[in-house]
Image 1 (cartoon, rainbow, N blue to C red):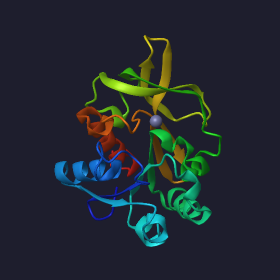
Image 2 (image 1 turned 120 degrees about the horizontal axis):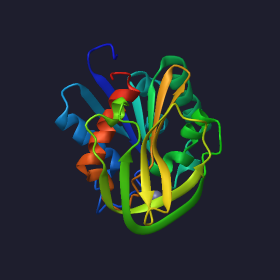
Image 3 (image 1 turned 90 degrees about the vertical axis):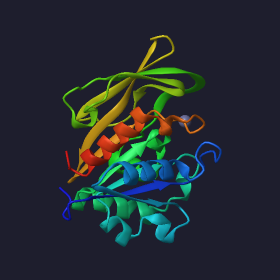
Length: 225
Ligand code: ZN
């Protein structure tokens, strides 16, 4: 439970997502939603060009959870930034919520300790069916199965450690592909949640269902629920 009665979320994006869909980044959509629709989450945004790449020791010390979207600039994140993030998760219990292509982000890979690769990446723009795999998990609270109209799918196997929970699965290409789309781990003192859907050329991060899952994920990563 955060110490001052509020969850402090630091929402980071490299800001390579399309400006016509995300004028203020995926980070802007998430932070604006949390600030406007909750009374006990305070969200700030950060990016690669900020001081210490937006993840200074002071910025991380203020965060109960770090939300991360990376895609084409993983290589620009320094080892020093990765080390700071890893330390705050493992030793202080800061949560980490990784989005979609973040599976190859350096801080996420450092937390997982594995390759974090998927078998396949197919941007066919077809519908995805998102199902709740663990109805008892706090991140699934209030979430019903839903359809994402257009999405890119990633194919199993996904090279990560065995998760503590598989909260959501996605069903793709006429039921032929099933992917673990919402996974949790405990890393040191911290909680990690990976949410796979959300290819940046589609307006998926604006969807109410996805924003709701994100809010639940922030609360869970911050040990509020
Ligand atoms: Zn993608």
